[in-house]
Length: 87
Image (tube, rainbow, N blue to C red; front, top):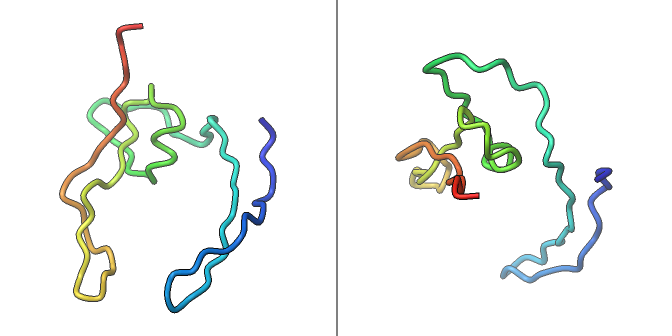
């Protein structure tokens, strides 16, 4: 799939704001990942982890923790997608 620019998809009201919605495309191809090394995990964004779920050395922050202002300051765990090995 060739990636396309974001497409406008209307507006949504989130009081007191009106926020634009977008339709986006994603690729199932992840590039630039270093070679695997035993015992090493790469912490990346969740969409990167989910693109190639067979790469089990990619993990993402899970159960984020925020400060009093709601800024993410940590995570309770790391996660990776469950892969169905029954196929």
